[in-house]
Image (cartoon, rainbow, N blue to C red; front, side, top):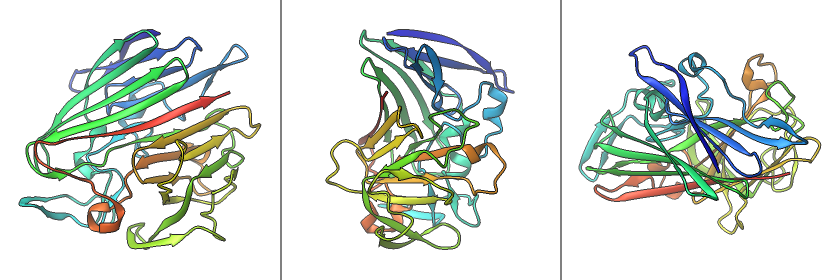
Length: 323
């Protein structure tokens, strides 16, 4: 396993942002940068040519002006929260809304806007990047968080999130990563997607879950079989089947020559695509966000995102390339 560490740029306060790259025996490479614990690159070698699988940036300035959160680690809570005031077993806190009166991706308290401490470990057939940071913000408790990127020689990448707080708090982090398996400027609509799911969340006009879980069958949300994305717009959450066998999501290139599978130890995935008339970079990108269902703290059936004081929670998302 090859490990490279280099300067990726400098923040306005003078702090250096570091890029860490892991490369396995198949020349599959991942790069993560310390700013936002951001997944900056994921590439494979095809016929001797590097193929980038992420829609990403090669300069720090673009990540500092990144409203769509390309590659960012999102936390403490990914997705939307429908309330701003909480009392969790005596831990009281109020969040500042940032999205039509609601809180999106933790608002002004996000993991994405700080420079994490990073270290790399080369373990032979496996290597990992470890980012650590302590957060003391609008959420209850001081949270010590860690994000680990672990690549092996079988082209499997795991992203591992862990956190421990001195008070009861919320913890539902995720990676806001965008894929295009044939290049950032190519049509995403011909990619084929499968989601091992029978249900999705109903949302209101502000994209906030209503609490109702809806069947996918005979709707545009039915990705139980592999088929093209098409021109539909999605900013929606699917309930992953609890009986799935290690592959919650399957994404293939239009020519079927490259397959990416994803899974996690949580119950949901949010898929986001641009509106067809959008002329921005996200028009050619597919965001896949593995997480506990959005707004779970306000809906008992959505899952548990409460992190009890002095307890450590750990979540893992796995990405596996077949070519």
